Image (cartoon, rainbow, N blue to C red; front, side, top):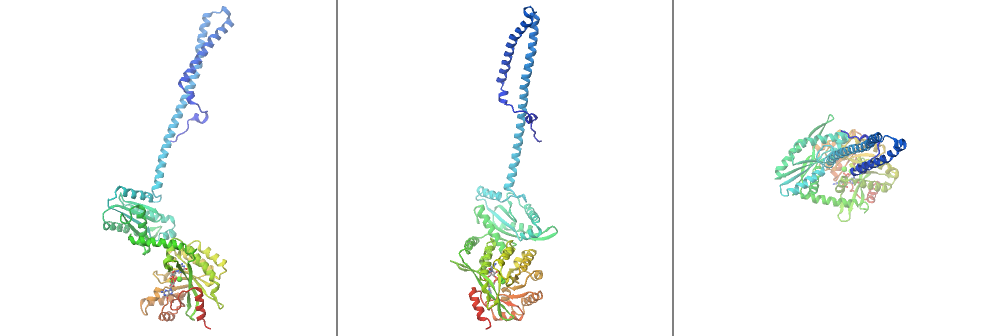
Length: 547
Ligand code: C2E
Ligand code: CA
Ligand code: CA
């Protein structure tokens, strides 16, 4: 019920109740008034009677009238004085009631607020499940209360390809999927075990009081099996898998933070191994993580320390056996560890976004060396490797646009090499980005072609100019095997789609002859030339050019 202010409080002045309602004050006031009125009445009435009637008056009657009049007059005065006091009392009482009800209400509100704050602090708003703060408190409390009571299983789940679902179907459908998965899982979890959402598409299951690992792992496997299935989202079906990392208390960590870090590490290894699997933490992972963190810190300083350089590998046109361009390949010369191959640091820098700075360094360096690629009047093409992270980032198109205009580059001499993995993650977005790059005048090459995905089906949809057949494909191929026919078919299909074909990793004369026979357009590999600094490649070009 809403509490309203008493009427009189809205209009009347405030009383000083202490002063006005003090009983001693009030009684004294009435007595003094009574005395003053009595004395005044005796003195004044006798005087007035004398004045009006003189000595001759009938004093008996006059005294009686005077007495009655006095009684009425004092009764009137007391009536007003007492009435006013009672009124003040009544007001005070209603104010008091109001104050009490206000107090009651604010107590109720503060209780409700307390509960809301508690929920906000300890529970996830989307799923209503405990959040990481509550999980941390619960685990730490459990460790304090039961230091020797068996193991705690800490299971870290991450939904595979969740960002894809979010992008294709929108965030609210993504949220829906999370709710579906977690409510299915939650039904299987009994106290004191806890399922907590860590944020995004990651959640943790804590199982308390396990006796043996081989008793716990079948449970984890059955839970993963339960949620690893097809979910229907707005009529579309999505098969959802999970990368899961497991760490155990006390073997893999004696507190919450360490358990979390180690389960998360095991989870990222499950992802790196190709997703859809459960990985149990082991100590080697710590060394690996430490080394990676160290390498990453050094990588962050590599640009300012001028430790990067570019090498270029010639690309040979097989129609005239002459070089037609180069592929730029980054090199990191570490002051202590020496040369570190790009495959070791590119993927690391992709994970934390540092790749964007590295890419920008590559673009600047290429611009600085661009002029020198016009040799004896002939302009060579330059191929640049673009990381999927950079390709999909919002800054990429504006960046390359500014890059060509700032350095006055001819974009038609530049090929951007992108990988299948970048495209397969989000085909629609990739097509959109690639179209914009083609509008800016760049050529697009699909790198590492033939590694894994059934790429032939979407080849026709992509706005590309070149496919680069991966080295692994070339190096293992033997005549008249199944792969050999696939290769021939790939080359034919590419030509049919008006795409040029580059074969990578040509190391032997046999390989060179074979690809030439099957009409591959360009070749790259140690057989022709290794990647080298620009000056040496230019010398090589001059050496082999027809005199
Ligand atoms: P990729 O784009 O497939 O580059 C070709 C790789 O094959 C290069 O390795 C090259 O040195 C190597 N290679 C060329 N010919 C032969 C051969 O005949 N035999 C063998 N065994 N290898 C050959 P590298 O320079 O170590 O680069 C590895 C990968 O790192 C590249 O693969 C590319 O994906 C990435 N990468 C290199 N530079 C950059 C860069 O500037 N940006 C980005 N995002 N990635 C880069
Ligand atoms: Ca490449
Ligand atoms: Ca390649």
